[in-house]
Length: 158
Image (tube, rainbow, N blue to C red):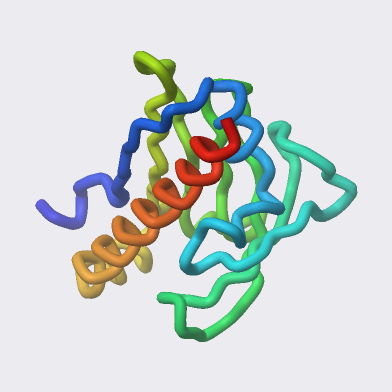
């Protein structure tokens, strides 16, 4: 049944840069505006200054790259330096979705995977049933753009 399937997606890309360099980039949320087509800035909040489980930040989003524009509260839920960075989007009482990066050494560089996973609450499932295919394509394009832009910075900076 479609309402019971996991809600989310991912995009992977090889980057000709070492894992440590990729980690330094993806874990600095204040740089996301350089790469994402939707989140044009982010800043640490509530005394957080860097990636750690429980650290908080907010992202300034322009939905679909055109609007509406709003701030989203985020909290880091997984932080394994050089491996995984994941954060929830929403309030402490209600997570809307989760985003993250997985890093794996791969040949002369790093395989970077950006992913998202929506909360399985019924309202989110209904939204996904109605608009999920369209939003999923938008997210996939956005993740691909983000990873391509990150790769350019990492590969040219070597």
